Length: 227
Length: 144
Image 1: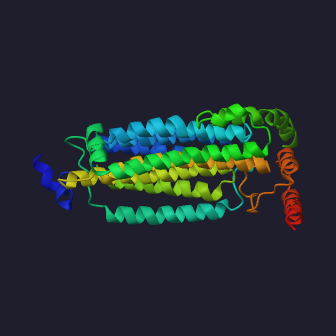
Image 2: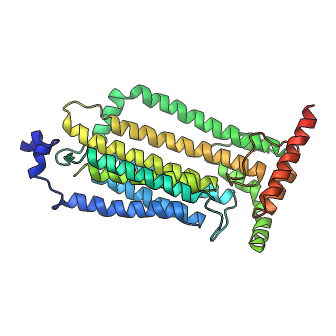
Image 3: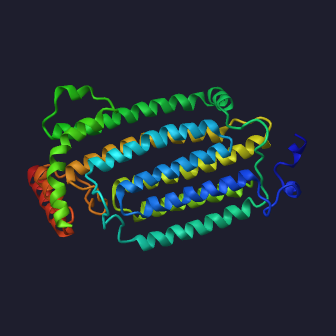
């Protein structure tokens, strides 16, 4: 690593250039375009289930970006948690709130032009500031991976043990909170079977779906007739 | 790699999520946009951690540790958020955040209210307003 001193500053300018991007940069750019396009489709499509499926593409593209940045452990955690569970939870939520299959004309609010204005202004300001601030900054991706499982695990359990344990308490609180939220409505519906007292978080959508299925069976015909 | 690539990508993703949060009506689509914003922050954290871990001899890997914490908190947030959305949908019959204007629960007219809304989910807002006002009036009578 003779170039260790020329990693950060503009002194490394002679070895890097905008006009001769490396292979990693080209790959990052292409995957980034796919990710950004999928994110745009996610927030603009009128088909609700398609939005969740395009979100899979965006999150998977981000996992590939993590891999290109040599953060492999984060990449696999991203695939496991986001693509594996969060999107499935969102699809369950769409199903249980009786999201219409097909195009729903009222997916966007009436203030979408104000939202577009705010988002474009924020994007322009952020991109301008970021590009201007880090114009001469280069990441050195050579050498040992900065985010290998060994390095991440060592730093996590050497320096970040207390936040890690606090996070487990927070996850427990979220688990209990989700159970309490779904049990309260069950008590108000006045038909809680005794077995559902011991329902865990993973089995919660199943019990809810079994309760909301009769209404869902009668309503879509009327909704289609109305629309 | 130039640091501007991941930084610009994360800024664009964040603003995409911002547009989604502001423009969407379905609560679950709003949650998806929040996930996009959190992922943009994660990409920023990872990129700057990779940059700084090569800059310093001794590093805490704080960016990647914070990314892991953010992912776990986002998973908890999506679980709680979906539980809330499902509870609201069961009470009010809609997950449309433009219609959820009152902060109190309508206990008395709950069942009929929900049935009305789910039957006419494309209906006008005036029905929802009158039903909500009726529920509020009934609740006031019950407490008086």
